[in-house]
Amino acid sequence: MWLLKILLTNFCLYDCQYCVNCRSSNVLRARFTPDEVVTLTMDFYRCNCIDGLFLSSGVICSSNYTMKQLVLVAKTLRQKHGFRGYIHLKTIPDADDELIEQAGRYADRLSVNIELPTEISLAKLAPKKSGHTIKLAMGNSRAASEESEAEPRAPRFAPAGQSTQMIVSADETDDRTILGAAETLYGSYQLKRVYIRRSARYRTAPRACRRMHHRCCASIGCIRPTF
Image (cartoon, rainbow, N blue to C red):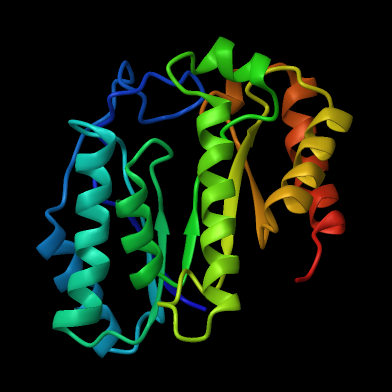
């Protein structure tokens, strides 16, 4: 499947040390409007260049504001343009439940980043984020999906399920802990995939951390269940 994978913006309120777009990072910043993303997606789709959209964003103004912008893109594609392609939306963990429900109505798949394998790593490298809030959002998405499946007349909710992304090589968390975290996520939230991504500081990380990234990418694929 060919997807247009873009950020609504790489501006971000957070200063996560493993992210290339963190607040303190000296990178060029850019921002699309929702209408620009819709136009870009439809232009590529009509030319048969893509099968769908994968849309994420840095957090700007507030979690709810950012989530509203993401939902607006998906809603406009579906309702105004009759878009039948695949839509994957990254959700903001502490956005209002109503916004997540709307996202699940228009998107095929939702995902919320678990960020790091342990609460200790998260507290050290992204102290403004909460592992509890992230997992609560995952649990709510799972519950909404199960409710939709159980009631045929209920509005659909992310029929392709949910996934997450975990950063490795950001610190010296060992392989066993990383793989254990991934296995727990699969079992607890019925995730379709735990994606592994290396830290933005991969090149300056200790060699052991860099090797860990390659080992975990191979190993997590072996434990991925099929639902």
